[in-house]
Image: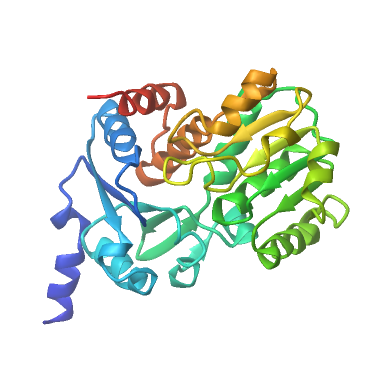
Length: 299
């Protein structure tokens, strides 16, 4: 096949008609994602035809298939793709450029295809920061404990430090992963502001707030990331899980009278920013919130 024909096949104007926004999500076990409804509905609100595809890596060869998936999406005329577990860090070597924040995090949840390049962004951290500002304004940030240091946990830790957390203690089932997060952000923000919790119970007892960035509490992983009796009414509690909206942790915290935020706000704000990166238009978080809520209602 000649290079001219190859270029013609990969031309977005050929495979993606004008006025169409073709995007998608790469990840594992993503059938319950609300991203298709959110992005297609927001595209429609801007007068665009939105097409959003779910690409489950478990069906196409797992993480080793990432280069092939990205190549296909580029050739098919995708404006970009969202990236979720377990690909947020694995995708980085296959990108041409990283935004400032994606580079700081070494984690990407949004890839834009532009001018022949794959550009990685992270809207998780800013999505969490916006949700926290909206739902936890004035919350004390002297001491915060975060459970989970995976791809989403890295973004949340970065957001909390950017928001002004004076001390962030990280707990993870993989101590090496928690230590890596502490080293990365210790270099950026100062070693006194982040560390690994040697005693999780003691860290929670001394904390102002607690953030859950583990999958514990999801429908597939019921329960709480730490014993319920550790929680006190003086804590604020934040989740990043959004299915279910009310996890066991949030239910228990609310029963105690804790101030809480669920995972929906992070999802809404990260989607609004990602839509803007894909389309060049401004995503409307209030409208996306309505789409998010509608997507969660029983048919």
